[in-house]
Length: 117
Image 1: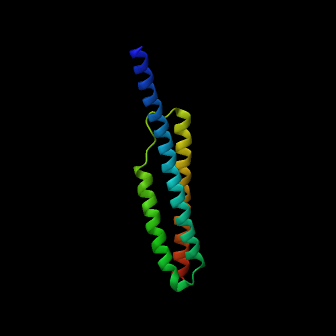
Image 2: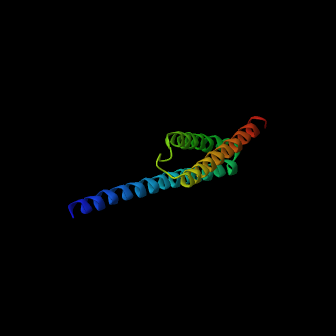
Image 3: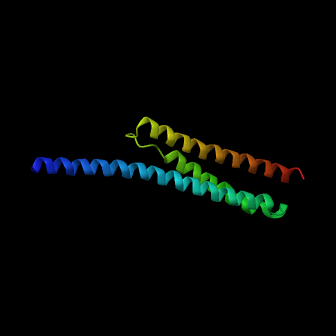
């Protein structure tokens, strides 16, 4: 009976740890998506701002993108993830990286338009 209790106890710890790790990875991705969305809002402010005031928003935007990229470089999938979950994690991660790159390109175009006017 004690062995059975011990088996249930160990099994529950392992299951809860894997569920926590999975939800922890989801929380990290959700946080990155939130940061990306906030950076997008700042970029939109920069695009709508008068020429002389854009630099304030662009400086804030570039700092935000730097923070996002730093977090993305630190973030790694859990080694115990099944292949399907790992693939889903990678797709979400790649989408955020693509969105950040797109924002950088938009900001670059905005900076160039200010330099050439």
